[in-house]
Amino acid sequence: MSNASVLFDAPGPRARTLSRVLSIVTALLVAGGLLWMFLVLNAPKESGGITLPGMFDESRWDIFTDPELWSFIIGQGVANTLRAAAVAAVLAIILGIILSLMRSARSPWIRIPTAVLIEFFRGMPVLLMMLFILLVFSTGDYWAVVGALAIYNGALIGEALRAGLAALPRGQREAALSLGMRHLQSKMLVEFPQAFRQMLPIIVAQLVVLLKDTSLGFIVGYPELLRTTMNNLSSFYGNRYLFPLWVVTFLIYLAMNLSLSWFARWLARRGDRRYRTGGKAGGAPEPDPNQGLLMAEASAEARQAEAPPR
Image 1 (tube, one colour):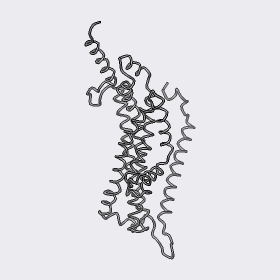
Image 2 (cartoon, helix red, strand yellow):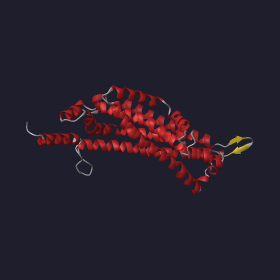
Image 3 (tube, rainbow, N blue to C red):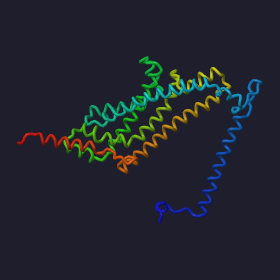
Image 4 (cartoon, rainbow, N blue to C red):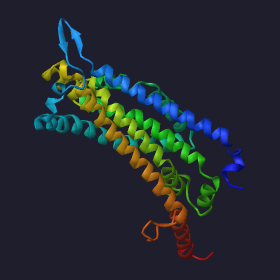
């Protein structure tokens, strides 16, 4: 008996035929919808007694043969987007680590206010946070975008890391405490590295959201990709090129987000493979995941050896 037939009955001839027919019908409907959308967009339109060409007419796409246009899109729009996303990502990870440690602290005087702070940051819209930072602190558009993205995503990353710490077996902490570690040492040397490795795909997925949220900088005047193409270039070239600029902006965002998502999946597969095999893909031995416990044990034995006999 195969593993698939353990959970459900294998489909019979009629079920397979029905599934095949439904798949073909669905594919035809999707193709028909895309064809209809193309025909509608490409149809000429009347506006004020003037016939405008369709959205896919060559006259609407001739600006993209100009190298200066691409240098402006990439040099300003893409560069500013990646610059804000990179700085905000680093700050969000640092803030998330700090909040996760404070959120899982033993003292309620630290744990409870941190929980309230995290819920407050998670509940505030990113755009309102950008406007608050810009209006109250007068930081400028760049730091308003970076600060809001770092605070909001740092709160989410901190909660994810706290969940990773809570999901670890209690034996990890008990083993570390039995070797003479303090609670903070156990958390930093034994528990937190394991929780960070387990939550790494979730953290990278949250960074994809951070990259997309840089488009909110359009509202506060930051010249990221969306503002560069849909505002600056469309105002310069005219509304005739608004749809082509939208398509190019969409494709650039899609390429950046898919690349980061692919990196997250690759990172998750690589981490799982190294965890199962206990080594790297090239055959080199990987550091022991319990290295913190081994170091603590060696330190405890050294202290016992140096202690004077009673």
